Amino acid sequence: MDELSLPSEIEESKLPKHIGIIMDGNGRWARKRHLPRIAGHRAGVKTVDRVVAFCRKVGIQALTLYAFSDENWGRPSMEINGLMKLLKEYLLKETPRMIRENIRFHTIGRIQDLPDFAQEVIAETKRKTENNDGLIFTLALSYGARREITDAARRLAEKAVKGELDVGEINQQHFEAELSTALLPELDLLVRTSGEYRISNFLLYQLAYAELYFTDTLWPEYQDKDLLEAILEFGKRERRFGLTGEQAKPNEKKSRKTLNPLSWKLGKKG
Ligand code: FPP
Image (tube, rainbow, N blue to C red):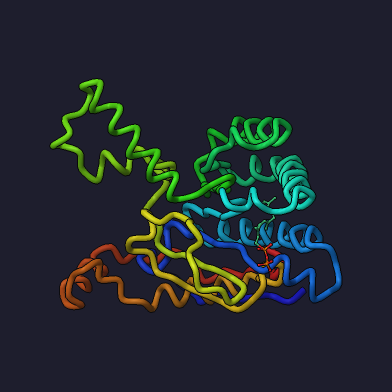
């Protein structure tokens, strides 16, 4: 088996804590092969497997994948049904591995919109992995950032009306606590595959200081080496968070800590 060697050490400060991915290109992958679109999604699920395994090995704290958007409900019903069945199949198959590998399964989005059979398996996987404290693996399902933001605003308004919150004191912490990502670390890196340069209503608030990385690779063809490349590129970026380069650097040095031992070797199959 081909082996992919990671650099001998990766500094903790250079490793994204939270990676978000817009998985795109399943349809084009299928079309190139004269296959139905669902065959592209099925191939995309294999990539999900690889990417989850890779993130766990590298020590990423949180991985959030955009699996089904609010807008995807407009797709042909055959494709929607196929995706929901794939989701169920995937969770049934992968839950034992999540349990074994200390992965906690989480979702964002309106899970109540999904068919009952999908809601049931999601609830079961969440329950079985809720005490795991390794990688937090989140699927965005029936998710749209604009709705997430307006929902958060409405909940804050309701609290204010009930007198639980003083309008004048509403701040970012209050707002962030109402977002579906409240339990996740700050989003550091956003990857989008398939050569599209859009955010498509994904994590709009959370992207404020994320590094953006776009690749032409179609999602079903996305390999460990591609994600490694994105992570290494992330490590090279100077993240200033609005400060000057000089101000930002000392902070980075303070938190520098070597993470991974020399022995790191990852099989391409993850
Ligand atoms: C975008 O490709 C992909 C989606 C809308 C769905 C992503 C879903 C998966 C990877 C499979 C389901 C995941 C799980 C975990 C069960 P596209 O169809 O828009 O591709 P195109 O732009 O080439 O047409």
